[in-house]
Length: 72
Image (cartoon, rainbow, N blue to C red):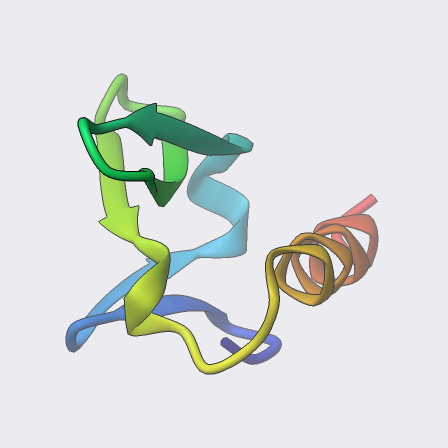
């Protein structure tokens, strides 16, 4: 994640293409999984397990909002 966009597993999604992001929790029989969900301007929805990120949910959300605000 940098000024150019979000890179997840080698795939870059530029900030200009990201319409909305969300953190989703999916309940399982033992606990839950957490995912970053990215909605793009071309209708693509990308769901990535937060285990791929080395930062907390809150820090990830704050960092995404910081970069998205730079586009306005």
